[in-house]
Amino acid sequence: MINDGFISIGKILNAHGVEGAVKVYSYAESLSVFNPGNMVMVKNPGDYPEKSYKVKWSAPHSRFVLLMFEGVDSRSLADNLKGCELFIEKAGLPGLEENTYYWEDIIGLSVYAEDDVFLGRVESIIQTGSNDVYVVKDGKSEILVPAMESVVLKIDLDQKRMKVNLPEGL
Image (tube, rainbow, N blue to C red; front, side, top):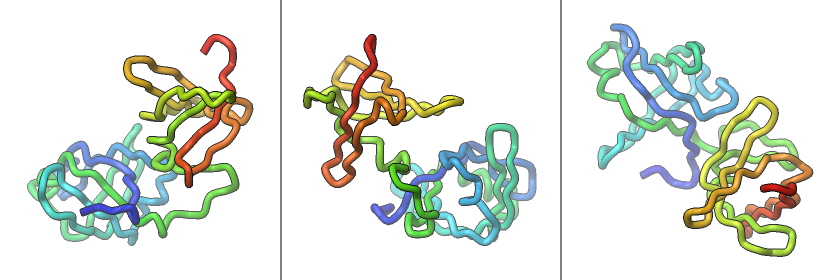
């Protein structure tokens, strides 16, 4: 079972070619997590056990990443990985700058306005050209919160809370 020591970095969409490569939708900002030699944990959707693979090679491909794992050397073996989630150990990730967070740490935070009114929880994050946008939901209502220093006042990962100063109109 994948535990807190791992972070999701992508999902295998399909096999690519006949030699065992797979096409991956990456959740990672940097493709360095897919560098040759890196170990990746592959988790099948369902109750199948996880398995670790060493990355043989990787290459950007349009909006995706092509990967070849050691030991996966045919189209049929690659087809078996379709739909699997990819994870790496959090300890292997590069250190973050101050006030910078992994998406996994942000998703699920409780969001409060400056006056401590509960706005909802961060359900997902949208990447835009200039800044990310946090999708905050409370039941049926949804607020889009720009991930900007002037809007996000404080993030407390220990308390799982985010305090925001929403611009007028949000």
